[in-house]
Length: 604
Image (cartoon, rainbow, N blue to C red):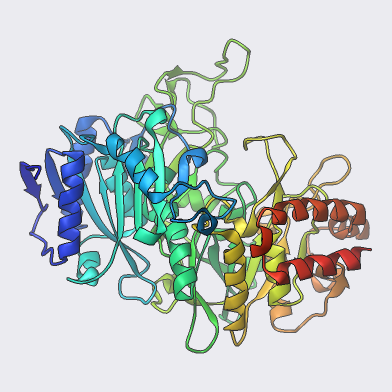
């Protein structure tokens, strides 16, 4: 057995009563060969010690305390700046279990391929042992994980993003099961990089990357890919959804959960600030979660949601006091910035932030930078990477909801699916029922933007915004949605929104941002049966007189353009849908095909 020279329990020694955990940690230490083990207990004293250690090693830079109190800067390897979907695998015994939308590798092959990459990868390093809970520790939502990592950056980010520490160990107890999360930066060789999920073993192995989406294994890896697999077996759902509460002037709060693909306004909706005309009336938006929702059927037959995370891992470029003031306020302290520009006075800057650019700085690549710098082709050199990030405690968000701490979750009255279409989808429409709503989510698509890989304007199908994150066959995932609906006494209504409709000149028809509350309030009116709706082939849309448009000066022509239905374009999209759904073969639920046929007949 490999001998470890030091077992560091940081502060008061924790009682490790779970034999399965002890044996697993020893086995993985024997594989990775760290110089010492450091068990994290989640204390503030420990946090300060880890930060000091990270600054000393160069893994973090302490930022200007006056400008960014309690905050740090990190620069990752220039070839390790985003999730690597091509190297992300679902490792189930049968390929059918993983489905056609996931990369698949047999578990035996995956372990055999990754094991040499982990062999001795932590020599002359510490192995940090991170016991954590996704979901409130004292709630029925809680799932325990333990991550092993050789990255202080990962350890400190996981402190922000999860319920980390001794409480998770106590919840685990001597006999409890946990998600086994093994991570090593190794030598950051992209040719030896793998992100492997073993749902049947409740295990995640990630090697060769230090980037958040690949390395913070409690987030997308556990809270979505592994959790979605768990949820299908146990009768609950793990979804790529924000959770918000809308408070009306009488103090009543209605909760919504919403799924949006990349670049479709998800973070802005999670932290929406109503325009002054609505704030004066007493409307407020409360943020329960910005990225992931776990949903369960409550004892009363309603759907309840909890945010399993404790922090925000958000994209920085383009974030400013106009686009998202609450995000700016959230990151003002106790934040870890990744791959932004570092200025001479140890401050940070990024493209799209308010104010002039600094005269000089160090770019995300670690190179000297100044405004106007271009490469040999004349293309501007960015100071911050387009996918640069901030990690901050959710509780710092000005709109943070105290009901985040409700152990049974918050009751969900509506689910929203979002998309980015220049002309296909109207501003908003409502599904006729749960089955129709599941079809709306399953057929979600968005047009690629300049910030995404692929041809500009190309349609990318992304069911429920879960295409990269579903840990099993999506055909079974759709069936699970349908089955959940059958177990609900009062299923949430389902809506679809598109903030990005354009006129023939390419100008946005809807102002978006805070004005989106007008659409949310129409949804509330529909939930309370206060207004009728107009039926069109794809669903139910609002009448202009039933949406509060005060102050927008919107003409009838503009309104009609927001809701115009181009039948030829929808028929073309139906063909695209059919091609996508055909990849699932006979496993696709008949209800999905039935809804598709109904839409075809209505369009004809």
